[in-house]
Length: 399
Ligand SMILES: *Cc1c(COP(=O)(O)O)cnc(C)c1O
Image (cartoon, rainbow, N blue to C red):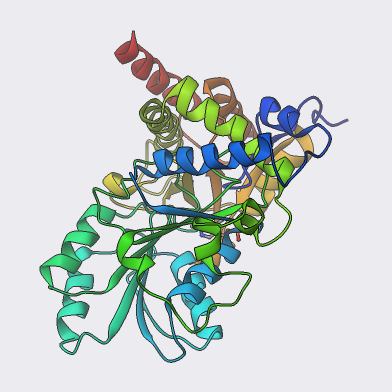
């Protein structure tokens, strides 16, 4: 017998759960791609994506690819072979972006600042002060590192660049965080931001975005090729140029529905607040399970609560194999948890709580984890009831 029946729940940090409405919006025949409704739809999408990124006039290039493609696009448009750039990594993903740059012949230095907390702004300021000749062309960071689940203070990192009086471009990967965590492209002085469709934006994998501020628009790297060039995509002379070929029509229909849900129906700030409530519930459960001893069955990867992401939580385990926990959740309860990455691959798991998630979904996944802990006879404190109490408190505030 298996209890895995009914709807499958995907609790990994991307792709996230796709709303039925988004999937249904994609279920139709292909439109004319040269004129008519699809052209207007794309203009509206660019405008709404700017609203999600909180920018008045950043250029928005839409690519038919995943986040790795947007990484490569940003590098190709900005840099020459041999250019120096600086990447600060607090998990795994900024390093991945830097490896893409290295593969393209860019001299991308990676500074690992530790995988259990955010990138310290002081480290960035110090590194930039040492670059007296201003050879560093750009600084690359992620907002939320999906491996460590640390959420960087992007505004503070901007202030560090300014405090060092350094002219480097500021490039931020928001693939895991856009739509889930507060992000302010204009107010935080970001020059380039990359994002993807399949996490907080609730749309199937296959679209990625580069947001290009005025300072970055002035750059043009020799690495750029016809297909990845963001100029015709941002300022097309003909609609066809926006996508370097046929538009990804069905993804655009899906994204249209998702952005309507996010911006017109829920409201972006409400979505951030909902993610904070969901993140708090997950954190209450993890704290509850660990209660009663200093060496309980698990702990947060990110030690300082101020830097724990509202989109994903990385949990370090003690005394049991997370592989077994995930397997039980999957085979017996139809719940898929995120695998651990990097250094903690064998001793951690992750819970994604981004995008289209509500209290029963979050309580469901936390209940499944607690049930699996019991099945594995792992001693633990009360986690699920702590999560329920946390959500109750959030609702009292709203009432
Ligand atoms: C998911 C993710 C990526 C990679 O995106 P893909 O769509 O898988 O290429 C890059 N950076 C961060 C922070 C991510 O969460």
